Length: 106
Image 1 (tube, one colour):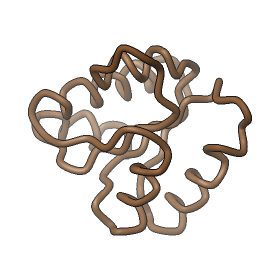
Image 2 (image 1 turned 135 degrees about the vertical axis):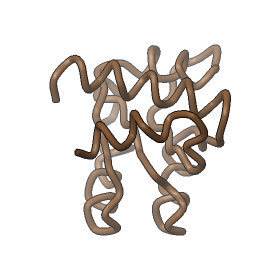
Image 3 (image 1 turned 60 degrees about the vertical axis):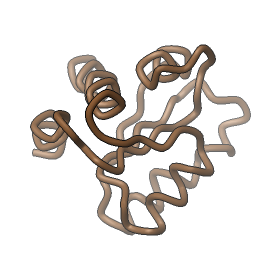
């Protein structure tokens, strides 16, 4: 995905954290997708081992949830308001991020 899309994904996470609801971490993101509550899933590419998050794009596709890969778990963690990196974030209530998510999915 283009750099612009990645920036928008970080922005969506930040906005949703402030005005909606997010789930942080692979397990929480997986549960949100399986329950059908996830609107957008953002996955970090630099997770080691990659098997930790490998299933997420697949279940997102299966459940028709937008899934975006970003290069850095540190940046993703920061966008989610964490002091540490996070492997994945699911947005479950968009809040003010709704338009950005629409753009990303278009």
